[in-house]
Length: 69
Image (cartoon, rainbow, N blue to C red; front, side, top):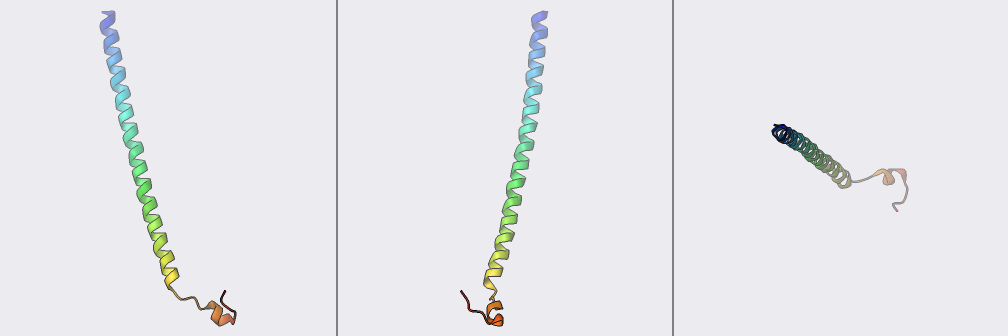
């Protein structure tokens, strides 16, 4: 009888631990996936803004009378 209780307790503990590990891993993977996508979107927007700024001609030196260096 003692072995049966120990067997059921061990199997229940293993099942509970496995379930917790599964949901914890799934949650962490989801957060990592969302973070990677958010960073890609932010860097894509930043790259678009920088390329837009680089394509606009800069006339402040010509208006100030300064030389371009």
